Image: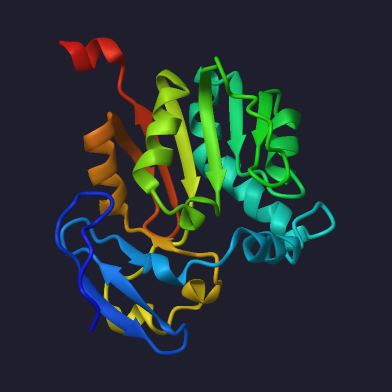
Length: 224
């Protein structure tokens, strides 16, 4: 068994376990329920890019488009009266979600570290940030969540999609989602609740499967 590493989210002690198929260790935090891959097993940037190039992410994939329409219905439409500006973070090679949001009348910037790497967000704040099937690729979730918080307007929304694990080693070792070599961070709704409390969000919605919507707490409220 590997030595434990502190949880990147809550800094508590984690439990390590070995994944024979993936030939690496994972770490499970009993406190915030976050699971993360041993950093020694991360793939190179080149391998990561090749993995993304294999994805069929376009309007020619009806299932992919439906996934985003459902995401909008559940995570954007309920708050649309408060939203004008959007940052689509991690848009991928085919920014389908960004285009669908534009068709809904929103002003949308896109960012992706490989496919749209220009820092369009510099000096800007948004009413909504969307990030779908991205945060599981992030080594330091607190850093990216701080970024989201920084670039949201007060009371702005953060809508995320990432598959939630079932919080047991046994189920995790049977889970298809871990097999993607670029997936390194795995969450539960509780993980995001801890993040929210630390950074200054509140949870508005989660479906206990893959969707969560957070709202930035007004700075005036935080200061009171």
